[in-house]
Every structure is written in C-alpha cells, then in structure tokens.
Length: 340
Ligand code: KG4
Ligand code: ZN
Image (cartoon, rainbow, N blue to C red; front, side, top):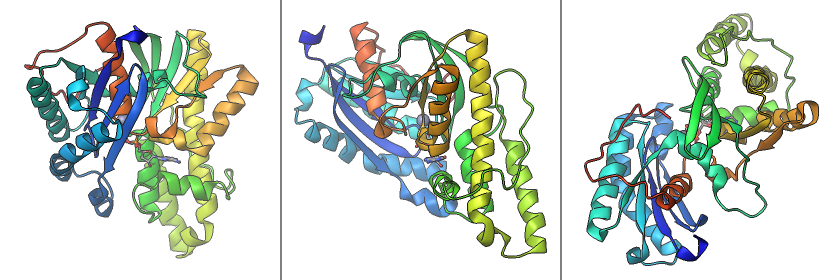
C-alpha cells in the first residue's frame, strides 16, 4: 500500500474552527486551522456567526493547506470532510465545499464522523508517538464532547459512556464564566490550578449510573457557592482564584478518572487514548500518568495540534477509508446528530 502514493485533503467545519489538512500515506504534510475569535465576546459559540466565518475562511484555508503541502490540487486522490456531528450551519459549509471540489477535480468523496476522527487521530504517522493497540478505550473530552468509546478496530467502535448534559470543556468554560474569566476558560483554570490547593473547596460529585457523566450539577453548585461567598466578602473570587480553580479542576478530573477506572474494570481493557481540547489539561495528564503507575494502564495523548478540532484527524480517517474503497456519492448530506 505504501508505494501507492495517496494524497487526501481533509476538511473540518463542524463547530467554530475552519480547518484543512493534506495527508500523504498516513503522514501529515500540512494542517491549517483558522480559529474564529468572534465568539470570544459572546462567551460561547454563536452558530450563525460560525457559519458565516466558515464561508469566509474555507477557500483561503484549503488553498493554504495545499500550498503548505507543496502539492498541486491535481495530485489529490480524494477529499474527506466532516459530515457530523456538529452545528448544521457549520457542517453545511464544509460539506458543500468538499462536494463541489471533488466534483470539479473528478475524485472520490469520503464522509467522516467527527467523533471517530478524534479517536483515529492516534493513527497519524508521527515520530515519537506510538499508535494504540486494539482493543483500547478512547476518551474524547472537549467543549462539545465527553465520551468513553470501546474501539475494537479502526471502524468498529461502541460508545460505552457519555455525558447526559454538559460536555467537560463546557464545565470548565461555564465555571470560568461564573468566576468572570474570559472564554474559553479551560486553559486559564488549568494555569491557576497549578498554583492552588485542590482540596481548598470541596465540590459535590454527581451520582450518575454506569459510565455516563453529568456536569450541569457541578456548575450550579459552583454558582451557589460563589454567590454565597461573595455576599460575605465581595473580593472572595479575586482573593481565592487559585484555590477555587484548583478545586474545580480537581473535581472535574476526579469525575473523569472515576469513570475511566470503572470502564477499565468492566471491559478488562487497560490501554487508553484521549483526545479533544481538554486533553491539554495538566490535571488529566498527571492523572493518566498516575494510572500508568497505579493500575498498569498504557495511555496515549496525541500531539496537541491533532487533539483540538483540526482537519488532520479528518484526513487520516479519509486515508484509512480510501484504503478500503469506502466512498460516498455527491448526494450525501450533513448530519448534525451523526452517531459513532
Ligand atoms: O477540542 P476543542 O478545541 O473544541 C471542541 O470543543 O470541540 O476543545 C475546546 C475545549 C474548551 O472547552 C476549552 O476550555 C478546553 O477545551 N480546554 C481546556 C484546556 N485547553 C482547552 N480545558 C481544560 N484545561 C486545558 N488546559
Ligand atoms: Zn471535536
């Protein structure tokens, strides 16, 4: 297969990042992401604005990806795009663009499930990174997702746990909003947490059945706690920001690790791969390292640029599907609630 020389363009537009990447036989040649700053002032992603920004960004982003890869678009063997899940208006931009470009170049089209892509990002050829062995557990943690998936092969995956309300990244961001931190607050909470006492303020952990997660109760608990404390001392947040952040982070990481422990016990699988923006968090990284020591887990954290929303992960799925001749016709439509 390696001698085949396969070039795939991947396109991602499911949420607020417009991204394009070129992969050559499993190795990334370019990975371009245009972030949308516009949402910052609203404290979250505004779907209409996201869709409009995708329309503005998609042509230059794809052009840059092709230029950076130093290839001609005529060399492309196929185009892979995110079909779902995500925001409909955002998905439509990438889907229609991918369709028309594939038609224009007369090459096959490959549809990609965004959640599968977060997981298969671990299969990008990258020096210093070992690919997971099947079967493994994948935990996808970001602003839009929180899932534990049992992965038996590239395309055999089963969701064994997921959030019943907010995603874990939302838990970070909404907690940050209560504290008056800018969006997205996750990285800022992480930074403060490093210097705070994680046991300063105990927050309740939700009681959710099985391997599912819930984060909306924590958000409410934090809101009431802060309101109460601020009544006693209006400067409470400023004076205790490091301890508050450390305590919030500690609670969130505990929730994730508890379920992961449960999942390893129930499945007997000890190999774990994480993905999504929250895998940048220092608390989750430390907890996974501890799991390696304490429970003999083998853990995988992908290169940062492949873990937040990106098109390299779409391109690797495109490559793997290309090898199986798994293409779609131009009648394919975006699907906001696409399941794994
Ligand atoms: O994967 P991503 O870039 O986009 C999607 O949501 O799909 O993830 C963004 C999320 C945001 O909620 C952000 O606050 C969170 O990842 N995040 C973090 C950290 N870095 C990013 N959360 C906690 N600690 C971090 N270091
Ligand atoms: Zn994502």
